Length: 102
Image (cartoon, rainbow, N blue to C red; front, side, top):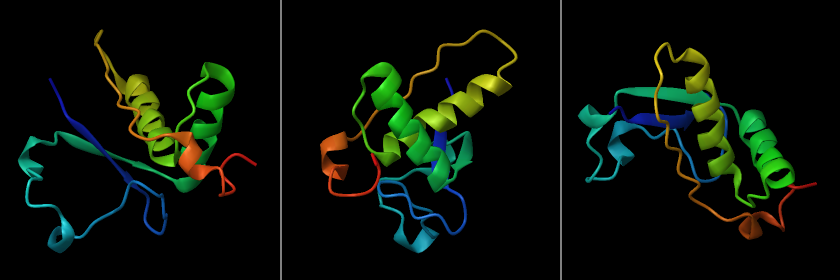
């Protein structure tokens, strides 16, 4: 099993996922357990959140769009058959007042 983290590209402000400095990481975070980290831009996360809603009927937020984008990037790099699990961790209704779904 591998654990893959997701973080925004430099300068990206994705609600729900942040590029934290080590000073702000939660005490329960164990960096040694993360095998790799994939960077996702705000544009990629927004696009995937919209795509999830339109194509799959999954009404989620931008952080979930970022997680699925990272999963899609990971699938492209796999060289062996694998089971990939991606967590959709937020709801889209929280973003109705934003421009995420316009």
